[in-house]
Image 1 (tube, one colour):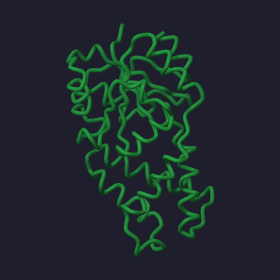
Image 2: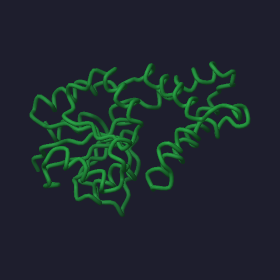
Image 3: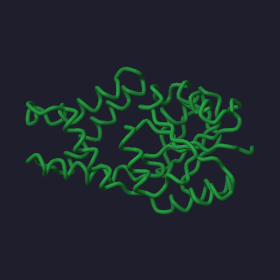
Image 4: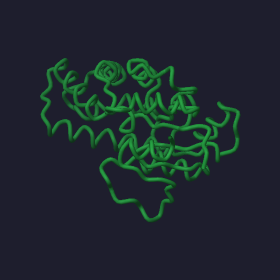
Length: 228
């Protein structure tokens, strides 16, 4: 299959969100006089992922997520603080500590050189994701940025992918390939929209039996083998 557009998830696929999150949370805790241990990070990640899952299911808005995630997690220590302003500081730290996976820049450059149209397809917060892409020097690689906060709907809703078709002016879903690490938002969303999927699975988790996946790879070499 020859694809015209490659839709890339960002966090955990191209950007090392775990490393950025760890440094950002440590900085946040230091700034607010809070203890930050490995157990704190693990518990926060679980809390944050649960909220993002609710957003993906349409049970929570982006505004509610950013207002609640830090204030709820550190309650009662931050009881009197304003949720959104807390999140502003935290997201500034995510940007400052943003890190890309080794080989991600070369992969994007080579795919762009090969003639693919590249689209960032992310559920992240708009200004944060745009700033992290700029910090990585990747804005020149992407033809379009599809960010749920700007589109008004999040992956895995098929409407997210239909919005991308509107951006490109290409309605044929066979022209697209979704590349990402998340089964729920990336792979399921693509399947429901009639788009082929490439599951980036570096941890070699078991593939689900009830979700069709076009490709499964464990590293960037696998992506290169399929697309270059």
